Image 1 (cartoon, rainbow, N blue to C red):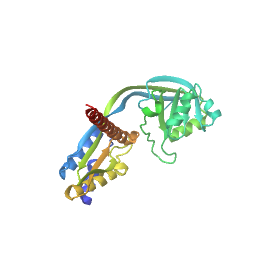
Image 2: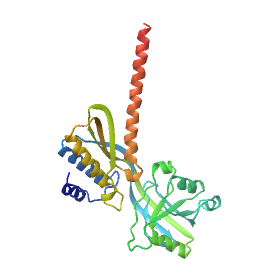
Image 3: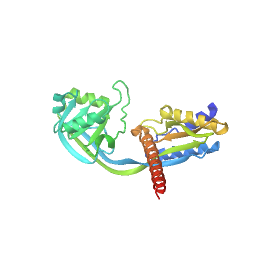
Image 4: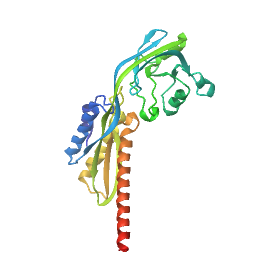
Length: 289
């Protein structure tokens, strides 16, 4: 694989490909076709992912509309409540969340979400971007299933410059309107096996999906091209160990492709163990006949 080929791949995949989207599947099929060019028979392996289509997402601060994006998979609800900016996660600060729409700094991870949920928050606001940049981009975020554990309150994401204004103005009330269609969709891993001289395998992996605001050339089509080049080389040259190449989907949504792949492998191990146990039991029974 030369520089010209690499740049062609980057050009061909210069589009947003979020996990579970049609664009992600398009990229998976493209990777499969690249493998076929050097004789590799890659398989596209689907797995379930939570999906949602936002129908309405609105955020009001003291009655003034603030541009936002609704959190995917955060349910559908309309809530109006006092506004509270959570600056710290000590016991007293969290106690002030009860019955309020809470704005938090940074990313809403598992523990922070559980903290505000247990403290009685009725909605949440996050922000991203940079106050010193001219753009007003807002990332499309989601309430991941392993974060919510099925306990959902509505949330929105806003730009950092607007978040600063909310604090500067001393906003006291907020309102979130969130309506969405939630369903189970499909994301995809692309898996290529190159058998070696022995049955043991070495796995090489990279993800090929992107975030909502990126075409993902650096993160991580560069890695995908890297292991593609390795696959192309070893498809034409002998190697002792088998090689498995895994291009994972939905990495940006919480390593979902990796988790789905490992879950399948774990199930296969369990099946092999059960078969071995059954064979041992049968052998033991025959000895006593």
